[in-house]
Image 1: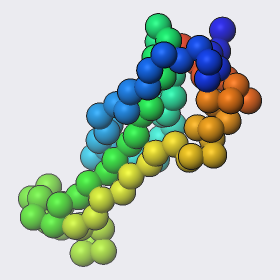
Image 2: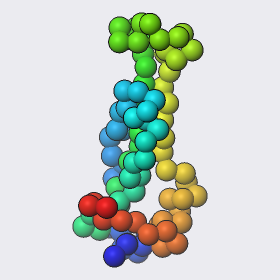
Image 3: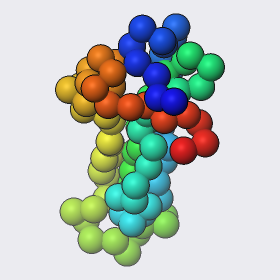
Image 4: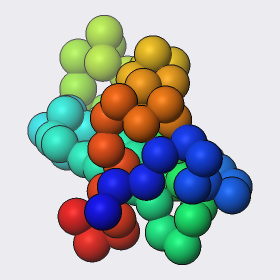
Length: 91
């Protein structure tokens, strides 16, 4: 059963899940889940350092970039208020 704000005793901002390509960065991921009364918040990042040899033949406009996905504050608020269900860790 999904948890609501009053049922969370803590919240954890998980370490960024790093993607290594645009395809991986754009795929669906679980941004929120609850485990034993703890709300987990997941972000996803795609970082392409300018000096990374792996991307030396990539067009310049894609190099030296850092993209990041994090749950929207309004969606997080709705989850905390119980308007959006927060799944368990196995969802």
